[in-house]
Image (cartoon, rainbow, N blue to C red; front, side, top):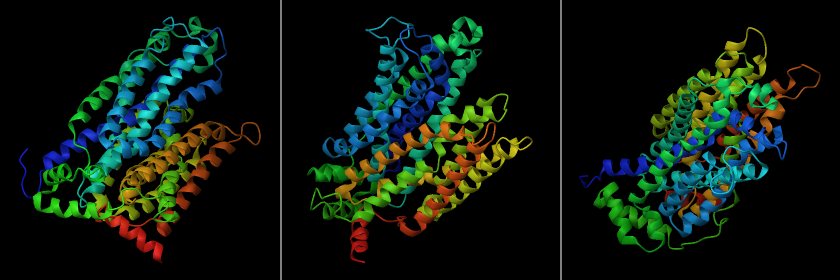
Length: 491
């Protein structure tokens, strides 16, 4: 690729596109369970040595999130000590191992097709391994993109990572749909009666279909692990380990030779002290990063994304997967809104307006869910809720987490922020079903309106938080963050 004094856009785009494959795998891995969980549930309900209860199924469906917490917590240590590139290679290998292991958990140690308690534990270990990869990718991919991107387009490029996450979810919806083919998902009420009681078209799903769904991730995982070997390390990490010459060459390829020298000097000026304590820039700096992550999950979006087929099914939709796929398309389109407006409108306005839109959607669901004749309004409210998230908290949180922290504490600070994100993801995902099914009296809809009413209230709190505490970072360099937080400390 030709390099000019303005740098090579082709070179920048090529390495960013490889990095966002990590985001695609993030979305793929977290959403694959939505198509596989019923077949998996019926498979383990055939076990003779233990009872596969709803509690076990809830844990198995969410076990990858445990790995996500571990991976995100480790991301700062790995990114700081091994570098961003090597950490992403590790993430790719973990994705690959998890995909094959989840497809064939019996490998080497168990009889194929015979569900046992030991096999369940092994399956969950493979899912946790994949979750560690997701946790690493979720923290380091935006960090990598943020550290190689010029400040003028950094927000847009980091937003592509969120696009890749949503695209990965949409891809796996289609993959699961095509894998299922003419077969069907087993009916929950018939699962405990044995395979003989199931529709013949559901037996294949129980014995084989869920395996193909998990195994399909091995293709993008292997591609990511291979391609990431060919991208450069980030200039900011290279400067931190004394490789200024290599950092300047990479900066010159991206920004042009004259601009590269200026950027290199700015990086070196903030790297005089290579390691600083996490609280060097004050409690508020870390608190803002943590709360961005907390609110991104506490607004309840993953309760919609993970349980969309069940929600639409409870609304009486004949084919909930079609509406789920349609929602995935809407999510893609509104993520593009963020990508093409984040550098024009800024981070704060998108977050605030997105919070308001989510509150309207969530409260609309709370007011209409379960009421006869209001199904269209409920579905529209869910779409508004999801679309508002996709142009705001979905991508913009990752943009801010990637750029808001000073260079010298970025690895550790990002790790803490993303760990909180996965902790609250787990909390929201595991509490949604029991909250949604709560009843004050038999047959009432208390759980329906309480759950979405709570999410709507949290959305309004999120808007207030952004307005009062979150700084606008549009157009600022990563090195500007150091001065900004120091100035805040003095006030």
